[in-house]
Length: 257
Image (cartoon, rainbow, N blue to C red):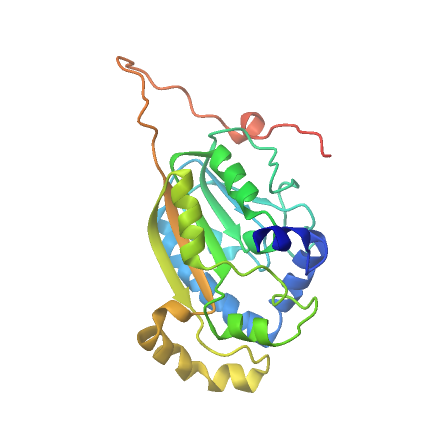
């Protein structure tokens, strides 16, 4: 099944998918969904510290990053940056031009769903993340009304329905294999995927009921995990190496294929 999935690209190119997904976030359904994402991000971001924060993908104005005290924040995206969302660095997600062990917090904004090989993305994030660093993953949940409708209806290449939906349990297993400890899993948005202003507003009661009655079946989730420190530490060192800086140490030059 995984082999068949990797051969297909239901949303077309990643560049097209990012553009269409950003447009979807401007619809009534996308705005309501995005508001809940921002709410959960604003609860977590103030608790994370370090020197460098990296966000990969941006589908809404990232004002929520202001809640975090890390001074140096970088948004990475190869295709956006046309004036609506400011991009600080253009790079391939699976081949970041970022130094190894240099970033304290990485936010993946629905990035796994766009790649047929999400493992390569997570391995690259693991490379740039410092020990004890945090990874935040936003994703669409296949075990929800959204996932069911995605399977039952022929959406073609419409976003976000043509994306790969990975459950938080599956992503959790991938992270544990890489040596991460899961800290937070929040699910949200229990309303059906009706893209009409009246339905989004009138079904807000479903949100309150769903969060209590079936909390694991929200349409979206936010996952936070911590990278473990290697147990192979040298004995007898009484000094610590200087942390790398973004400029010029964080950015590395790589040739694109």
